[in-house]
Every structure is written in structure tokens, then in C-alpha cells.
Amino acid sequence: MSTYFTLLTSSELEVAQFSVRFSTVNKRTIMNGTHHANNEQAALWNGRNGQAWIDGQVLLDRMFKPFEDLLVDSVSTEAVRRVLDVGCGTGSTTLAVTRKLGATSHCVGIDISAPMIAVARARAEQKGASADFLCGDAQTHAFEVARFDRIISRFGVMFFDKPVAAFANLRRAAQDSAGLHVIAWRSTAENPFMTTAERAAASLLPNIPPRRPDAPGQFSFADRHRVESILAGSGWTQIDIQPIDVECSLLEQDLVSYFTRLGPVGQLLQQSDERTRRHVIETVRAAFDPYVHGAVVRYIAACWMVSAKASNASAAE
Image 1: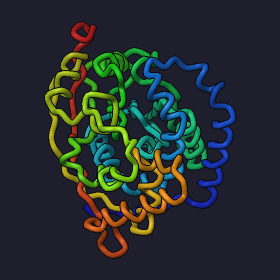
Image 2: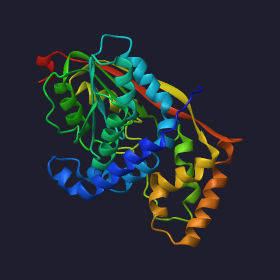
Image 3: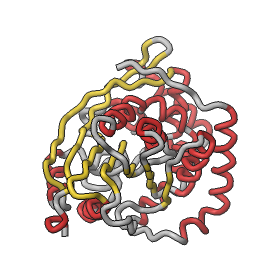
């Protein structure tokens, strides 16, 4: 799959950077107004993880554009007018859906990360988009009942510590028969690119935390049967879970920036001395060689395309 990507203009970056500085200073004030049951994830995404995604916003938007396109296509085949984007991050997919549906629609993005939501709001303002962005935990947020006729997510639903409760809460926010369309990662074994850095650096960074498939995180939806059970137990019907293999890419010149900012290795490198850092970067960069094709890095992302329908109100209660 080939796609064309557009970088942010300098003015957009300036707006985003201002919002990040503002939200970092005022993060405690923002977060105090929102209840978070998922405290560990709130701490991560309002700290180093959130800032890493903000720093890598352009790179990540480009790399995950194929998934954004799939979700935009999913809302453009039916009469959809009120969309909720769960785990919206810095807002790329929410804004893309807003553009597709036009002024008669209302798109809302929600994310637990105050700094990322600040960037999303700044992007919407800069583009004159009508999308709204909420800083909150979709697992517990008091959404208006039966507000949305479509709920979507690009890699934003794998981080709930109580996923059945979270999807039940999303069901309450959905109209009867509303559609659910989310994309989540399959297993680590099927996504070797995503674990290349930690495998290569394992002997150099012995404190790399192990991946726990049963814990909130990137691969927590790897088990198809678990995902089906979560949805069936939270008021969703007509559940369809299909494997998709999507080619993603980034520029080779961005590869080092990618693995030194994001993931377990990126986190640990922030705390490493310069000698260790140089050694890790050299070792890990070499491990990515099979994915490098000239000026472009390509890999296959093995994911689930999950769709479902909201059950009737009596069944959801």
C-alpha cells in the first residue's frame, strides 16, 4: 500500500509547540478536573510516553496513515453523523474523519493525555476544523447516553485496565445499532518490526520490561478470542474480527529518531549514559537493516480490524 504524506507547516508546528508548553505547565490543573480509574496509563501518557508521541507526531501520522485511511473509509460508506474517536492522541484520525464527513457531522476525540489533547485542539483550531477534543479516560468518562452513531479507534483501545467496563461505557455512549470500528495490533510474533529494538538491545539494557499480553499495552488485544469475549460481555453484537496486514513506511533518516524516542528502548535511553546510548543506537540500527530499502524503511503491520454493532438498550444494561 502506497500513500502520499503531507508534513505539518511551520505555522502548525508553532501552534502545536505552544500548546505543548502551555499544557505541560498547566497539566496538573487540567488533570485535576478529570477522573481517571486507569491511573498507571494516565501517568504514562501524561508523562514521557505522551511527550514522545508529541515529539514524533509527524513521523507517526505518516507511518500510520494507511490505518487512518481504513477508518475514514469505514465512516464514509454509511450515513454517519456523530463519531467518537477513542484514544485519539494528537487528533490526526479525528480530523481526517471530520474532513471526510463535512460540516453536517460532529466528531469528538477523547484521550487520557492532556498534552496530546492540547496539540489536537491546536491542530483543529489551525485548520478551522469543527472537531472537539476531550481530555478524559474513555473507560469511565460520563459520555452523553446514546450520543454517537459510530465509534472508531486507531490503536487506542488496548490500554484499558478494565476493558469490559470500558467497552460497556462506550456502548452507553452509542446509539442502538451504532457501529464500532477499531484497529488493534495482533501478536508480537506477527509484528517483529515492533520488537526489533528491544530484542537487539536486550543484552545492553537489561532492565527492558517484558511484554505482558494480559496487561494494558500495545499487544493486549493480540488474542482474538479475548477481544471477542470483551465485546460480547459489554453489550456489542455482530462481532467481526478480521486480520489485516498493512504495509507501513518511514524515511530511513527518521529511523534512529523513531526507536530512540518510542517504546521500551526509547524510554530507557533517556536514562542511559552517553557511552551506553551510542552502543545501543549502533546495535539497534543494524538490527533494522532487513527493513531498510534505500531511503525508505518498510514493514508489515499485522493487526485486527474489529467491527461490531451496539446491542439494543435493554441488552446493554
